[in-house]
Image 1 (tube, rainbow, N blue to C red):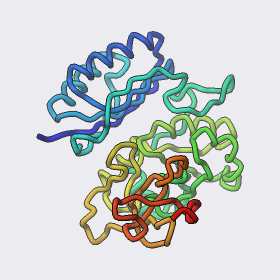
Image 2: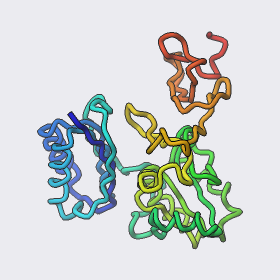
Image 3: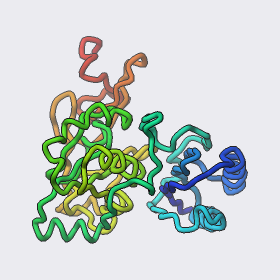
Image 4: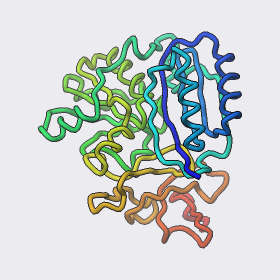
Length: 290
């Protein structure tokens, strides 16, 4: 049986969040879909897996709501058990930046959209621009755009604390990138209010670029928040690079692990040689336990 994973978000005003939550729960249960849905007054953020047929039924049902009819749906091949369960929650934000009273609604204040085709042309023509990666530090390790800058963030809500790290490129052409685009809509709006006048966001996120231009400009694999952990396109191609490095020995690897010490929350890259017979590993901070 063939499965599909869909990734999408939509910033749109939602007043009846609890009603949408119950409707999404009912629909997903009927279609036997698993994954995560976050609903807030600012919109919806979703990753789901199901059979190809049921995913298409879900997409059709989603589009019947005028608030979501033009949503950009990203699809990738599923594995059947990418998610352990279905989770549908109402939260204050669909991606947390926690600006409080300073918060803004993406779509009203946000960066200019740059399509994957336009970005590819920028690379081809040696356009003068800077890429700022809005993902967390551990996501960046397994794959990233060549020449991109990573802000020292463990969580997206750290952005206001570290924005001064890119103050030197405030007057340049700046492109913000993230997995599917949801963080960049909010991040570019925030940076625009901080004086970044020439700020762009990659439309559809990194995954959309990788799909159109596999192993071009984005090097390595993309970190994803499901059982696959990382994904790539045409990874058997000689152009594919492993850019990740084992956090313990430095060997080339893009295999992630949670620390074997259950009281440690560290999530890191660990090569085969640094794992035990069961495939587990202590993180570098726990070397003394081994």
